Image (cartoon, rainbow, N blue to C red):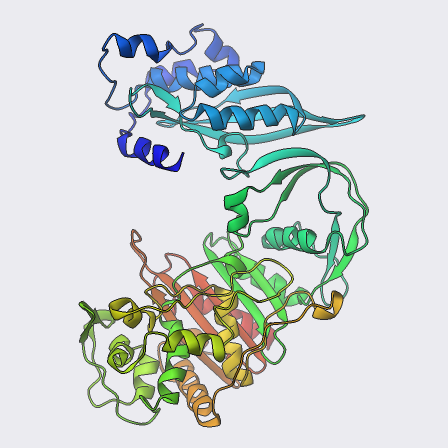
Length: 555
């Protein structure tokens, strides 16, 4: 299906903006408005027309094509005509399977679909229905949307099929099920014993889902009856948890205590509020206890499960490696030219700056790319991978945090990609949890796997690193991060933080984005934090203030 859909997407044309005709068609915003026109969309089986050699339809979709196709699909779905609704999509097989399950597995009945005003090729609609299980039933309401495209091959207008058309929480391959909850409910507590709820801490929704999946059966609760999203293969590969959409009868929750600090969690929520693509993590450096985690937008736990190039924050790991290999030393002269070429790629610094006769400490604080890239000829392809795993506990896929996490990836690369990985590009991927752990490792002197649920709850073993940095390397790295916080690229954000503090900024270029992702990692005392603002630009200006504000609150 993937290749067929890709072909279909390549053949789609840009839709026409719906004008006055659409405004008339959707007046009243209900099925009555569609139905008064009577037609079923004007589409017939394409076998006859194709045999007759009709010309393939092309060009922008008309308002009539969009509204009639939407009408055909929504009317059939509301009637319970699964085959008819599926035939109005560009993937009838997948549509039929999910729509059949909508009634059979999800036990959703008495469906009323009310279309809204189309916007180009997109038609929003609202859903009102009833979910019934044995003697229990509850109303279900939500909003969704469909998009009309030209079908590959004949150009006929069809609903662009994705599971999200049926419910916005669904990803392709997921399904809806009503019945006894797969996992009993869990009452998650903060470190002080107070209940954590998504109502109080909105961005904890995905975290609470993960806790239920992990500890539902172990925490002593009993399941209730609910409508939930059951994740498919692709969603599970992305470590997405099943999600409850409607509770028909309550179960008895078990209790799980976390390491979250209520005051710091509230501060983290406040820092990402209104920033749809911002994420931050704060943890205790000496133990790995996660004190706060927050994501703007709340749709995905980027803070724990994101997989993004970390940009120059990765230079903390690279710098430790270069110092250990005697390829750099804090107070020794170190090259920072405008450009450096390696493996067929030409690398440069931001705004093409250079530092003449500068030290490695100066290059680190200014975030000079070429100071790191220039050492690529002296390195083996797996040197950075080894350093990340052996010292910082990254890229081993063995963290046991208490909820699903992505534990960083530093693959072995060669030539130009290997050089790019030294500055957090290439194939290197991290998230705020990973980079907060990097800062914590520098502050504490050794890796402590971050965790949200104490290992004593279920006796699980935490990941460990095989070695620590030498005392000299550690001292130099702390001094360089301290200098960066006081007089380097992190100085403006860290102003007023005070105390024993260190930081590193980063920005990561991403194809197709006008602005890079902004990164910032820092420590103060026994606390370490990291954040990212996607498409935020320079880390000092985007993620920096978020991380610094948390460290100030903690102080």
